[in-house]
Picture 1: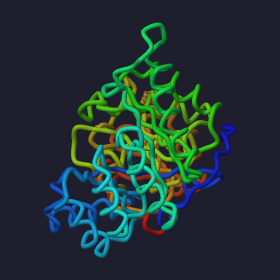
Picture 2: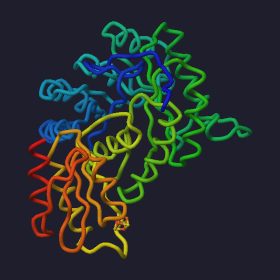
Picture 3: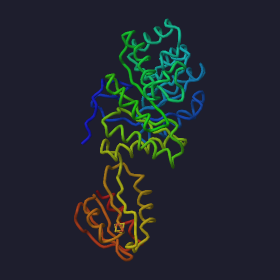
Picture 4: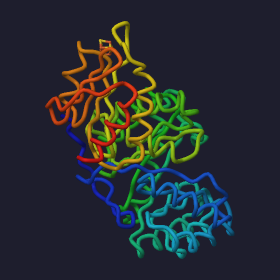
Length: 348
Ligand code: SF4
């Protein structure tokens, strides 16, 4: 049983992050934010995949000005990602964004920081402080580890916001290196009460990036750390959302769509279990129900797993025994397996 660190909840639009709220899955668009149509279309696609919070890059004023139109056309909370230029932060707040990703220490002039924080406070808009190992301040302590320097960099920004009586804070501390990321989050989790956005940055392409993210995010979540997650992949953002939910499902932290249990196959298998499992997975991806489906290759481990699932098959030679809610309900030929299994899933 995972015992979650209870953080001070914040509200990002209609989504609560922290406290006892479910751990949310977020992503970031990779379109040009100035291209309103493409950005909205991508966010719509992400909404369909159940992305719960979306962040967009705001590199210049035309991008900031596009935010109002984007916000109007989407349903999930919108976060503006801003670096250095306080005018972009003010424009994003004016456009009605639900959150800012901004390091106040990077703005420089204290009066400008004050102006942005005041505007965020008036609108009750949270600010995420995001420290990345790849873009650390120039003044790192050479005697400290990267994780310690990341924590100190984040604490600097936190202290700026707190000194302005602002506490709608969320923090992220991302590195490509998994042990560094874990060490940094573990440390800061004890130092501040604010919710943590967790992830492994620049994790790579789906093949390796999903594994790297799963190890990093999964370890932290198992330690009870993390209130919202982003799996950063060099891939369409939809892949990030799918991977995010799979991580949360693996730790029983969220239910989201079906879970497929399938055997790895071995010398006992007498059907084409790989093709069957792939076909079932493809069909299940069209379904929202939080059900457990088992596709098992033989009569040794098969019946146990199949009976434990909502629907399951334990295959034999060119056929399979079909189980539903722990009871045997029939025998199906290999050629009909996927169709019959999916009909039973539909009936549930
Ligand atoms: Fe082999 Fe049966 Fe286990 Fe599948 S369930 S890996 S076929 S023993």
